[in-house]
Image 1 (tube, rainbow, N blue to C red):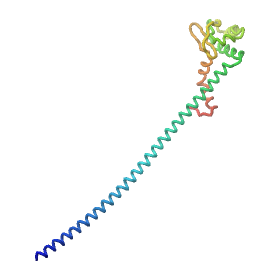
Image 2 (image 1 turned 180 degrees about the vertical axis):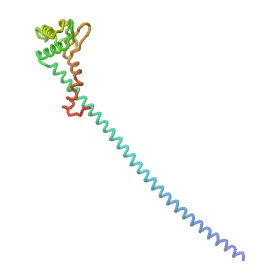
Image 3 (image 1 turned 180 degrees about the horizontal axis):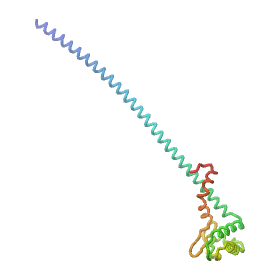
Image 4 (image 1 turned 135 degrees about the horizontal axis):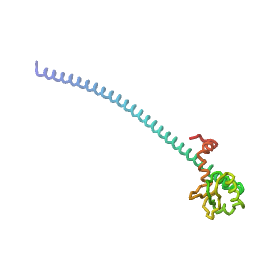
Length: 201
């Protein structure tokens, strides 16, 4: 075989090999591109799903927080209205006409006074408007109830909106209207809550 024929053969083989390598490279590139496209689509889908899930979770958390804040606001409003109702009750007792006011005080003392001599402490305003004969009325009621001892009016005055303090043997009984209403509040609150249109609890 001539040198020229060998060169042509080598060139032909080289071309054939180059074409084969090119075809394989193109096929490999197409495969890689296809794989990359698939991965890209999968990653895009996953990222989109994650974003939607995160957005849903953020929305759920935001709604949960909004619901919690709404409940807190409702509870604060309920507490404000209840406080207002019981504050009004104290004020109404304080604003009773003198006859009704002191009749209530005498009934409270007669209903809960201990035996023994007692001292009645009033606010300065109540001491000034105390009806004549009030102490005699209280002592008569105590005697009728079989409670030993007498009540005398103290010269001491206390700062209170309404009601009294009863001192007996070193003990002070708190008969202020604030204390009276506070003591009754747990019993009265469910009914008041219902009348205000709130659910219990």
